[in-house]
Image (cartoon, rainbow, N blue to C red; front, side, top):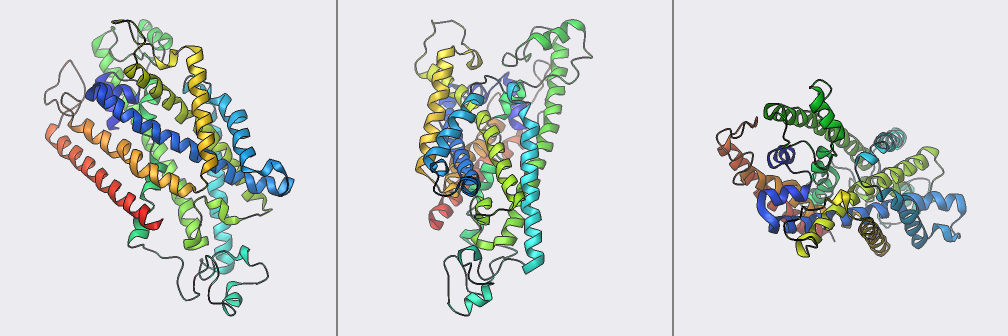
Length: 438
């Protein structure tokens, strides 16, 4: 919400444009580098998830000896033949039709995990003792196995509980980076907001309505030349509409993620894997197979969104370092970048993430690291700075230029400082916890 209000105040239509308006070119370059790193790591993690979810399904269908189940085949093929064409799209609006499919995919996968967890708990109770019996198929249950050997792989002593209601110590704070990664959509918010139409555009006069319809999302109507009062009212309507979108979207995501985390932990205990679907091992259960395909679909549709925003940041970052336009010439929007530049940047980004995904197989470590660094910067540091930025929407005490935004400068200053300091503390704790666990 802080980002969106700041976008209205600064007339910014992207994350990097917001950083530049609030802190200049140096801040834009610094933030862009970190956010590109975040999105790059996230996209590589998505490719790892695709392999993790597809590999057991293809092994069951094609056999473990087939070359099609190899890591160096699945990731490059899926990345180049499925994801790359989607990444060639130039706007977020072009990806809008896939949103329904993505929501359905995560909903079904979450339901499947919750259903299987309840089924397992009903049959054998919460996870305790041996947490991965699939490694010991000759034993009917963990108690029989524990009568013969004292310990087994990931299995714990039968008297030691695997599921705890409350955590403590480093094990409790280790997942902070992953949680930040899961709930962090800040980088995409300004670009999505820029493409959001005024919900009341049909009720305004004909000239303004025509302006809404013919103006491209990237140029937006913020700061346009038509009636100033109507422009301010339109800003407010769009911000209020997007505030509702933020609340609904975050609530839906938090509900699904919490359901998967809680039920997965109860079923598998401390032995649950970073990608929870891997905890089921090789199975012919139809529901789990469909859930794996749904997750594969979800991340395939999420990758292009991150790539699109990252590509625009790379393009703008290059323009800062090596401006190619004549002095005084208007800047070319990243959406209108030349075709060859568009193709080269897209190809390099997708190819590099494929190469990185082939080198790493620990999804949890990747998500935790980028969440604890770049994720904290995006979720805590940048909004905290915007709350205290001189001349920003939260620092001006008196209304200026007819702006509708109400000012409580002192309160916002304290809130911004608390957010930034809290983010720094989260970063230190998460990095320390990740280092300790590794």
